[in-house]
Image (cartoon, rainbow, N blue to C red; front, top):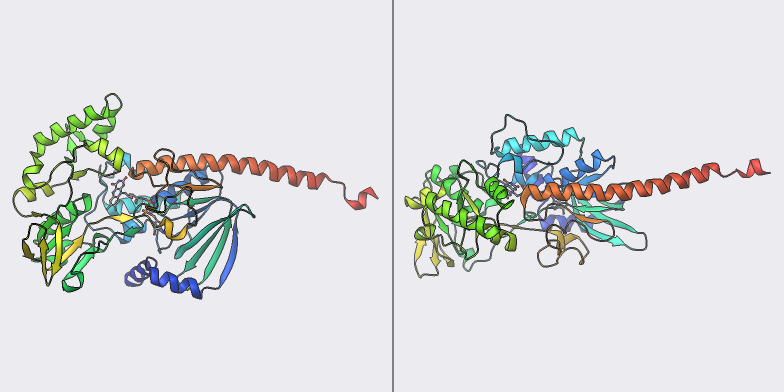
Amino acid sequence: MDCLREIQGKQAHDPIFIEKMNTSASWRCICVPGPLIVGAGPSGLATAACLKEKGVPSVVLERSNCIASLWQLKTYDRLRLHLPKQFCELPLMGFPTDFPTYPTKQQFVDYLEAYAREFDIKPRFNETVSQAEYDATLGFWRVKSVGVNGKGTEYVCRWLVVATGENAEAVMPEMEGMGEFGGDIWHTSSYKSGEEFRGKRVLVVGCGNSGMEVCLDLCNHNARPSLVVRDTVHVLPREMLGRSTFGLSMWLLKWLPIRFVDRLLLIVSWLMLGDTARIGLDRPRLGPLELKNLSGKTPVLDVGTLANIKSGDIKVCPSIKRLKRYAVEFVNGRTENFDAIILATGYKSNVPSWLKEREMFSEKDGYPRRPFPNGWKGESGLYAVGFTKRGLLGTSMDARRIAEDIERCWKHEAKHRMAFTRSLLQQPSSDSSS
Ligand SMILES: Cc1cc2nc3c(=O)[nH]c(=O)nc-3n(C[C@H](O)[C@H](O)[C@H](O)COP(=O)(O)OP(=O)(O)OC[C@H]3O[C@@H](n4cnc5c(N)ncnc54)[C@H](O)[C@@H]3O)c2cc1C
């Protein structure tokens, strides 16, 4: 069963499979009275729940066979929420009080399942949206989806909510000599545990939160990880001064300018972690919060990886020049042998591949063009949830705003619908007038 589930989940992400299905599909048409939401991750669920609370029905389409497919199918076993639970809960329903500060991936999935049950959200699974376009003549969105059985459906709706996420597709960088390497090359979205790498030399490419944590996991399973660090990076302790670093930063920002808070974070980090540049992790020129605000680049919250780098259990390497047979040549001229490579190179939005619209979403990166906090609303009933680069906190803000906005139109149009129906009912029939 699990195997079938995994195959179906993978097919839903396979562009060749989708293309094949797209061309062989026979289409049927469904009119959606309320908004259509694309994606049943936390963002889609949060929006559906907020709408439901306001009495607006919605339809949710999901390409996978489960809710929160990113969390269920594409994350490693040891994953916990990076931020404390109070910053990750969705609108209208908190986490159970007995959950730890940093819930495990399974606890987070359980919470989302309970959330969907609570608000009676039943996504239409295995429906990959392949195209969505506004029909100005009709004044409606036409959204085409393809199921695993090849059946195509066209949905016609007044409001379209894009909730496909910042992590819709894995970013796989091209590296010279990739075909030559011989060992496994995986993206972190396929990595589950270090168990299968026991005793192996593994090169992890990318030093964000995932790359750092995968290295730690490999160490814990007696693999021999090395970490490619191409860029500067801010590593902060996950907790400082008895509070979560994220919570403390949010609190300080209420009173102090961002540069001052950044300075404070860096001093405390230096006292707790030492000078990270000495172990090959140079810090960016801008402070962690300012950099996050300007570029969206998230600081790494250390959960123990740094200690392993200091002890030499994780080696830091420069950029890759090229791959060779079971070996990697680095830009400093050194060549080292590896059995496997894990790409912790992140994800990207897939919106430009299916949404035929260029005003609200950028073709380049698939994010709303207008910066936070104004990216959630476009023209003609188009909305975006979960593209703020602010995690689940950003999702909650978007979901509430979208639901309020749609509710206004919904009520306004309902008044018109009722007035129209009343006028029809009150019109004397031709029988009685004669
Ligand atoms: C490893 C990892 C750890 C994280 N930890 C945290 C954390 O601790 N706190 C935090 O706030 N954030 C965290 N994040 C950020 C993360 O983006 C959010 O947690 C969250 O998953 C975003 O929800 P979402 O619904 O916007 O996107 P997703 O969870 O990616 O959901 C989008 C859904 O849309 C579906 N979809 C995509 N394209 C289509 C299509 N064409 N048709 C139909 N369906 C489609 C996908 O299958 C998916 O189910 C983490 C991210 C990662 C990768």
